[in-house]
Length: 301
Image (cartoon, rainbow, N blue to C red; front, side):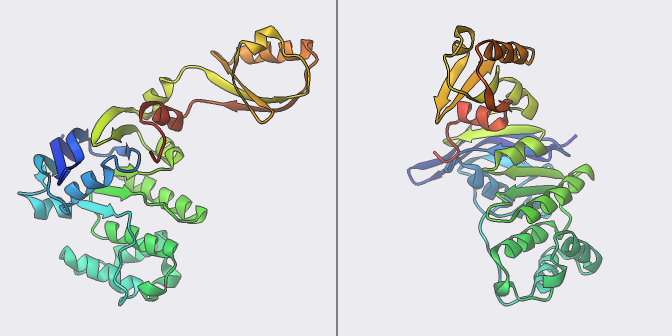
C-alpha cells in the first residue's frame, strides 16, 4: 500500500541555520501519528515542506505517492493542514470562509459537508459571524474546518489545541478520532504529550532537525522500567527497606521506585510495622512525557 506520507533524506537550511538534517519518515495510511519535539526541532518546517509552503534544500517528500514539488497539485489536494498560527481573512463570515476554501479545490456543491463540519466543531451559532469578531478559540475551530473542507485523506494538525478550552479540545478529538476510524491518516504535533499518548499509535521524536527516536507509543512507555509511588507520611524514622527505594524527596513528599505492582503491599506492610501513617499516596505509571524527557530533553528546550 502506498504510504500516506513519505519523506526521504529531507534537508532544509535557512542560511547558516540547519532546520532539518536528513529526515527519513514513512507514515502508513490510516495511522494516527505523533511528530514530537522541543521548540526549534524542525516539526513545523517539515509540515511546511509537505504542504508546499517551503521547498526542501535536498531530498523529497510525497503525500499519497505524489511528490510535493513535481506533483504539487495532487499532493495539496490530498492534504489538509491546520496551522499553528491563527491566519484568517477578516472580511468574511465563517460560512463564507469555508465556501471560498471549497472553491480553491474546485468543489462547487459542498454545502452538506460544510454544514456537518460547522455542526461537529460547534460553529453553528457563529456561522454567519465575521471572522474578526470571533474569539481565539473559535478562530482555531475555523482553521480546523478549513483543513477538512475538501475531505483530504491525510490531515496534519500542528498544535491544534494551543490556547483552546477543554470543551473544544474534547469535541475536536472526538471528531478527529471518527475521521481516523473512517480511514483518514492523522499527523499530530503537540506539546500536550498526554494527547499524543492517548491518541497516537506511533511516535517520532525530533531534535535539532533529526529524528532521534521512532516507535509505537506503547513500546516507548514500556521502555521505562519501574513504577513510582509518591507518598506523604506521618513523621518518624524510615525503615531501611523503604529508604533504599526512595528516588527523590520534595516538599514533605518522597517518591519510591518499585519493579512490580506486587511490591506495593510489601511497602505498605513495612510502613505499618514502622507505625508510619500514609497521609497521601499516588501511584505514578510511566508515561510518554517521561520517555520524551529521557530521549529529547525538556519540552521547550
